[in-house]
Length: 112
Image (cartoon, rainbow, N blue to C red; front, top):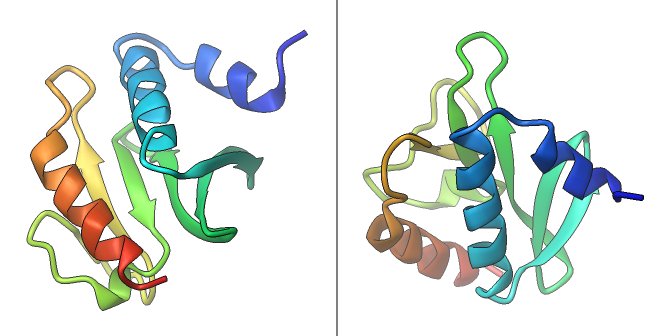
């Protein structure tokens, strides 16, 4: 029987599913702990909420949301009217921009 997090990933259509599974494995290698919270994949750093995966319902855009994004200044992060969270959009049909993502994770970890 699948746990809720595995089930969440497997319910996604391709190429989104493959992208999410790749990021899921990559984030775990960055010393982040995974949990299934608020009906999505959440990642904790040092036991605190760090980032999450989300597929926006209205247009199916996929992004990583960073909990302390309001303290971050990376040009690839978008605020879009949010007070705290900033998001990093990822196109599942293209290669994951790991260079930007590594910079963002490094900056975000300094906040904890």
